[in-house]
Length: 134
Image (cartoon, helix red, strand yellow):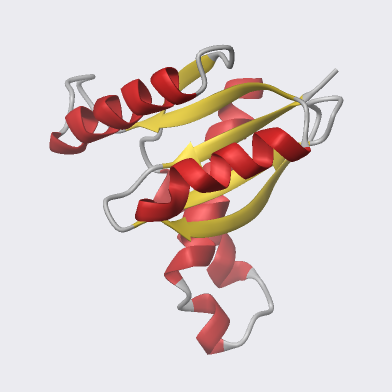
């Protein structure tokens, strides 16, 4: 058995989430600069047994691709080239940032922590992963 990781890919930074080895719980892990995401994934895959990578896919309400979808597709191609033996799955990421922001606002956190955009990205990645798990 192995875990899954999810990536909420952005032009500047990426939120990362992971499951446990039984793939029952999706937890926010961290946020990394986009320029460092491939290195992060490589280190993660060398440390843990990973059964797949789940990527958020930006779509409009009507299902059409957004302007970000093409950028995410290019990133997916980089992942496939670098990690050809790791399955990659796509999940619609619609509303994940809004849901993550509301969740953070409901937590008993300091104002500084509530305004941390990296936390939003990591929680968004965990929502993407949870949606994939069903």
